[in-house]
Length: 259
Length: 259
Image 1: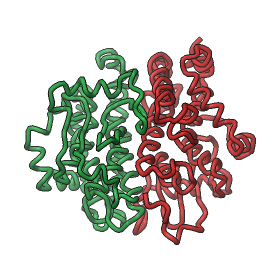
Image 2: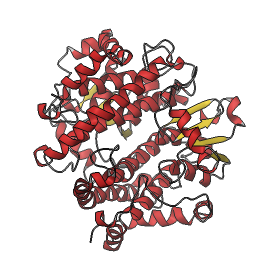
Image 3: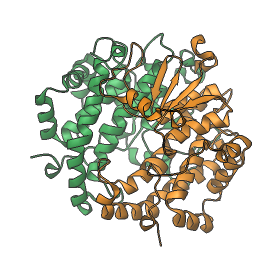
């Protein structure tokens, strides 16, 4: 990636995160990357009319501009005149700029992107679908029996599958020691996995406590604590910028958790 | 991207697609990119013991190697000693190498990746979930009532949402004329959208026929025909390398389509 030489116009532009106010959601992955790097940024979660700004970007009448296609959904990153969406895509752009990808490893970015996409698939998108298996347009209350079935499968089959996969990644030689997912240092893939685990712990506390106690995924839970304990992330999590979970991707419905 | 100078060891390596034999599936997005560029490649769909080779890559005992983390699922691309997975990630790697991203447009890759991810979200992953809304581990026959509900929502709400979004992209100035999604020439995002539309047409022929006749998404259906008519893609689709849809991502259950 020619990321060592980003276009000059952008070098001094601030990073602007455009995401729904009110819950960490998918925007949290972008926040954690910016926070871990100590970057300065603006955030529509904390400005007046933030919601209005989000909506203007995804309005059906908004056709984008000469260089940016219109956008379907937040999170959106604005950097200079660049506007991009899709969580993993924003991280792909930010990673090299924030020092959150492996250095001197030209193909490393593809491995980090792969790991981030896999965490988002299994521990964010699928976790969301546990409470909305039938339709996003319906309330949870209108799809409760289906949500219960899906959650049972998620806890029994999917969650161990994905935790087991990341355990395998940490055991692999490419992790360079098993502390971080790839290359022996923290990358944005670790931040993504941390946030996914944090969300799933919120949604399914009993299942996650049991899985942690069983001891099969020590590497994964160790990575979770390791990310949580880094200075910048710790400071961020204790700050008011860290929002509480609400009716977003991760929801805690006790009836969906295991007994 | 420093993709103008890929590592030398890889310059003469063949591209190897590692994907389940038996259905186009997610591997088809990789095939279409390779075919559109006239690249030579190997494909586990058409070799002896192809299935065995796929399984060996994702085996729970496989921990990857010194530079590649283990992989969770195909499609997988092998190129020299590089092994990567995740459909959009493979395309991100191949795009610049195959001339399927905008030229002289440093940030163009992030727009192409964004468009590809959005098509895969709404027109591939969600289309898959219509027949498997509760659990991948169960048969369709074990989740038929839920599949019917999800399909109704998909046809009514989600499909028009995503088709409308891409129509908006084509109307936007960044498409440079509305023939292709971005920048006035065919990129791999167009190929991804083509394949997604083709799959959804197979799964929900009646709904798609109605939506096409209604005339609201002329740009999108026009792009579909445009990709289909390019020389290399046309030749490919008529070849034996183009597999027929089966019990994969896209399935045609008449009872899930509209009446």
